[in-house]
Amino acid sequence: MRDQAPLLLYDGVCALCNSVVRFVLRRDGQGVVRFAPLHGDTGRELLSRHPELTAVDSMIWIDSDGAISIRSDAAIAIGRRLGGVWALLATLARMVPRPWRDGVYDLVARVRYRVFGRYDACPLPPAGHRDRFLN
Image 1 (cartoon, one colour):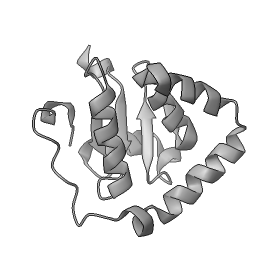
Image 2: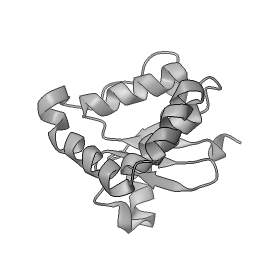
Image 3: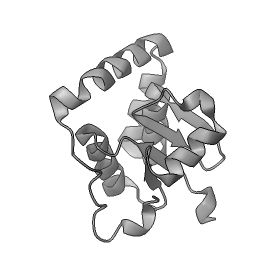
């Protein structure tokens, strides 16, 4: 079952991406979402199997059924997974045409290091959650 848990691949040195990871950790009521940095072993292995994803440098969501979402669709999939008000917001966001959503997503992705900062190395996962992080 653990191998079928959803997986969030993220830019390990991006402060915004790491904030999203902490956000999901706090709100994943079932505690099943797994995480892996894009440039770690898990991320590299996935990218080798899906070369069409090599240009993605921020977040990739892999649902428990194996469906892959990128850019704004990944953010929406995360919201749906978290449930409650986040699922409602995800449903509303889904009504916005994808080119507009992805345009905003791409703008944030382009400036994320300047605005939110960057780590020299991928931070260690929070204590108590390390078993949910893959290399």
